[in-house]
Length: 189
Image (cartoon, rainbow, N blue to C red; front, side):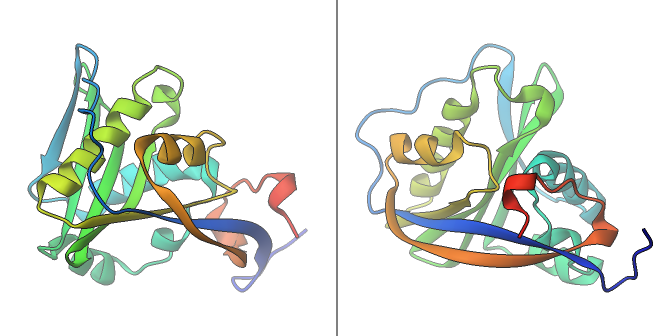
């Protein structure tokens, strides 16, 4: 079967929008020994694409893949956006992106682990690190969204961390075939 540049795969997802209006009362659990999170003072477009593509490939993360480099570079230069990378023994294992452009709310725009880091037991501590970081900036609220294309433990983890569901929306994504993403059968329309 041949494809044109305009070919898309229609994908159906339910997006859950969430909000947290104050920091959790309990302290964030510590990251295990050998696991650290560093804020990138400058994240290049290739570095970001490696993080985004590696973390997001199993979950049909596609929007930033089609963003032109110049636009992505502008986002990464914004003082409102920060990129934080998790590493285990010096090997990158995930990242999160905080966006304070709607201050005093901070959006957890992207959060996830690379495939080799999923199931190792530090995802929740990493999520709580992101929440503590967002509220540590002085935010009055944090927002995040997840969808049925994400890891099945994403929504329960966000709820456990203290986010509450604001609304759910059914969306259709027209994912370009040219991206080469594997679309799970249960998401195909």
